[in-house]
Image 1: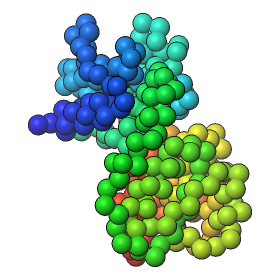
Image 2 (image 1 turned 180 degrees about the vertical axis):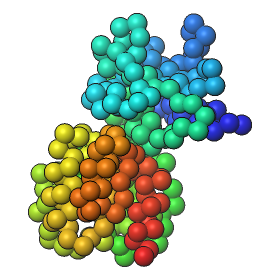
Image 3 (image 1 turned 120 degrees about the horizontal axis):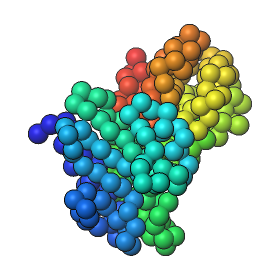
Image 4 (image 1 turned 30 degrees about the horizontal axis):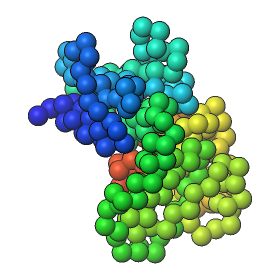
Length: 249
């Protein structure tokens, strides 16, 4: 099975885990709905994985990605974004799960969102033994930081999440073995934030997530403060794996 088809099936399985989510195929398209409202389009067409989400908060950021476009039929004006991936493309599964979550929350009833939040802890994996390491999570998106904190906790790492406004003060207090900075919601200030947090953290390894393009990555790398730069979400397994490697050195 191709990586694209596998990814599509994983996304569909994740979508169907949401409260009252149902799979349908109107007009030949595969969609997942909640209470008759679509929150994700999925499918493999022309050897491409296509996914569409309603992103009222992050659409402008996601649209800066080269494989993202406003959804047709006027849906783009309402925050819908379509993404297309070909064989060999990097598949940002962590980010797509974040976008799926944002899309569900944008259309679902409030009581279903409460039900979703109430059931999240029940899916927790077995927690690892404490490693003795501490990681500071910095960013504006509380959901992304919460997911990263949860994943690190289950890896045996003590994680503290703070808002960007508190970042330099907390980082300067010392103690963390690594800092994860998510600049996804503050792309215009990413470079200055990397410099400020990196300076406050001193010699503590800095991991920067949510960089929007290669130019920004190059500018961030020129600062020399970051141990790792990536576009992925801070809670993505690929990011956490690399953070764990940094902590083990």
